[in-house]
Amino acid sequence: MRYDERELLELHADVLYLTDARGRTTFTNEPDGAPAWRVLLVRGTGRVLWRLSDTVGDDLAAELAALLADEPPVTGFDAHEPPRHEQSYLDLLGGQAAQAWSGPAWYLPEADPHGPAVLIGPEERDVLRGGFDYVHDEYDALAPVAAVVVDGRAVTACRCSRRTDRAAEAGVDTEDGHTGRGHATAATSLWADAVRASGRLPLYSTAWTNHASRRIARRLGAVPYGTDWALP
Image (cartoon, rainbow, N blue to C red; front, side, top):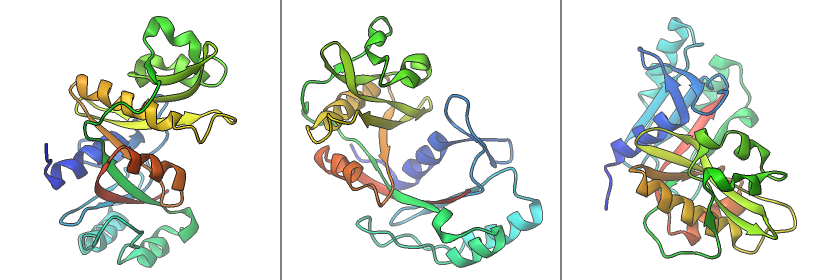
């Protein structure tokens, strides 16, 4: 199934942040959400979407909006393309380039199973204790959860880092000593199946510098649809 780029960019932004009646972002869409970053710019190859946080004053927001509206789409998803007006955003917001976050975003299509992962129901979540206490404690907000379990405890866990009624963003971690074995790929693949079964689209994103995470996306046949650039 193919998805419209505009819809994908909107699903992505909605998963990341809660918004107010004006369309301004307020908090991250996660348990105990943090204040939204001030600028979010999501670019596809044909469309561009941007949002500003509710902490940006109206006059400054108008200046930023004029620049954001002039941003072109990216030419591809293989490498970082800085925003056209990146330096202006940094100047207006008093930020540094090192503070900006950027990375690619994909959706996960149906794929064959990738290894010995299992779904963790609420009655089995004690296997998450120790290495994944946060996932255990916030299980209801983060489900579905898939894990690789070794000797009765999870060594890799993939959960919804953020979710809406229409989409969910993967968050996957592996304990030290268990990396490089395909566990993250297996858990993310099974998590994506469970997300689709819930009627949501499974999304996956990371930083350009996170090469391990980008390898997981390639192994899963992830389909790129956008790139993020955000400034706190």
